Amino acid sequence: MSILALAGGVGGAKLAEGLAAILPPGELTVAVNTGDDFEHLGLRISPDIDTVTYTLAGLNNQEQGWGLAGETWNFIGALERLGGDTWFRLGDLDIATHIERTRRLKTETLSTVTADFATRLGIRQHIVPVSDDPLRTMVATDRGLLAFQDYFVRLRCAPRVERLEFPGIENMKPSAGFMAALSSSELTAIVICPSNPFLSILPILSLPRVRDALEHRRVPLIAVSPIVGGQAVKGPAAKIMNELGIAVSSLGVAAFYDTLLDGLMIDAVDAGLSSDIKGPAILVRDTMMRNSDDRRRVAAEVLAFAERLSQGKSIS
Amino acid sequence: MSILALAGGVGGAKLAEGLAAILPPGELTVAVNTGDDFEHLGLRISPDIDTVTYTLAGLNNQEQGWGLAGETWNFIGALERLGGDTWFRLGDLDIATHIERTRRLKTETLSTVTADFATRLGIRQHIVPVSDDPLRTMVATDRGLLAFQDYFVRLRCAPRVERLEFPGIENMKPSAGFMAALSSSELTAIVICPSNPFLSILPILSLPRVRDALEHRRVPLIAVSPIVGGQAVKGPAAKIMNELGIAVSSLGVAAFYDTLLDGLMIDAVDAGLSSDIKGPAILVRDTMMRNSDDRRRVAAEVLAFAERLSQGKSIS
Image 1 (cartoon, rainbow over the protein chains, first blue to last red):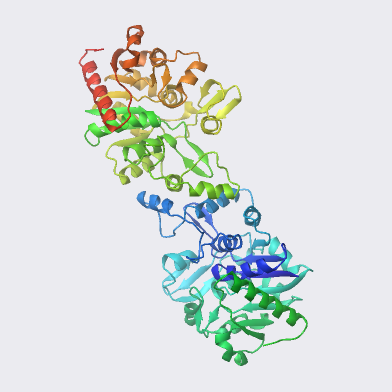
Image 2: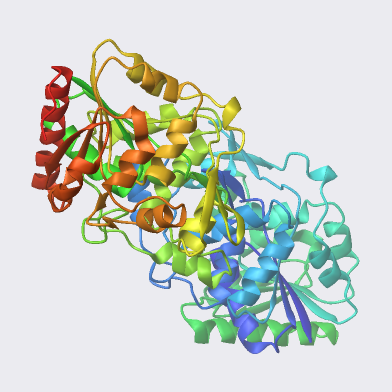
């Protein structure tokens, strides 16, 4: 059983953690969005890769919901004293990741550095950036075209989103590790984690060859809805879906992924929507992942769902 | 009264702190060695400039004797976990200086960045790098030619020094701020702080035009001996002088500076040497700077010594 999971940051990392915990070592590949990556203070920052890596390593800050456990903030205070840019708050522990990555990227790919960091942190599954090319999400808004982190962190998602752009993506390549997992003869299912469909998953689907490879898959593709009870579990997904005129519900999520999905897992509070969703098989369960037991349980349900789908049976 | 002080790191910073405290704002220029500067982890590090800056800002770690007060070490622990280079230990506060300097050096000079940091940290005297060019001390040793920090930090000064080299120095320029202070009509004295003569002062004296400008000075030039009772107050000065075959005493210091000096301040424990030192006027005092009272006192004695020398009287 070999699983490919597509993930963004925090929401994706939770399901990835559950999958990593129940799958044998090496049987999970998490392909992580790099559209949020940016250069800041001369450092290369890959927020989604770091969230997934920290979470799978058990180093994530569970109280705060992002970043590293035991993080301290002395660097950013000292930077402020010197007049530096402090709108993106880098912790003292976290900055080691960015400094070491930046140094290594002069001679190595993001895939290599990401894999090595994961190994050094004791992670026994694969984490791959979806591309080694400079995929950079731009957000077209009522306040103009914004770099992703300007929109997301500096302006706290306040501008109204009109559309997303991925400049130059037509000339980019998905990473070798991502494509190898997608085309592996061992692959048994593809899972789209409950990440933001627009900010985290659309950049991945927009890479050349990816949508085509997904459409020609020979294994079930399942998404877990990030919208529960008309709200995003975390982050601006609901706000953005609303701004883009898409139903803020699992109906909207199903419409967004459209013909790609074999199965969609939705939360029990949305059970009433299941008969309205056309296309994918629907699995209704408690999808809230509050703790690691939840994450393992949801992951196990996703895998069982995939197995049933691959046997040609859909169960709601 | 306008004073130019030549300084390296910790020893130099102590006297600079004393001078800064007793001189009116703007009347002290500390020209700081940049031969120790290096690039590490992709960051531009200027150890002596930082030591002087932190000390004059009152942010230096007095217990530890170097670095910043309240420093923490979470970054370096996280870097170690990722397999990064940790032989040069950068603190969480300190690294803000290196990141912000590195970022700004893409478009600004080291002189500009150094002056701005000093202003932001509340320093009302001038700190100037001796050069904006890449002055990099190399240490020729029995283990080969070593970059300065390899010798100084990584190998802890263990190799035997044969000579110092400053590659390309013949094509470098002293900084505008340093030369302006040297040639200022307001200048009343030049002070060589009790820094390592070879590691901290020799790079400065080796810059084109500097020795010539010092030799043609119209004001007294005074050094404070860093060797007390046959030992360096701090650091490897004694070891290096021994390896280079120079007397490990104020005699050796006087011989090193030779005809440059008008006056040499030596410690009371070395009073017996004063009659053996040929050339400069000798001032014998307690030169140990344990606290800020000591630093102000030594600074005041240096200034009074300079004033007597400029009136043509030498007093021992």
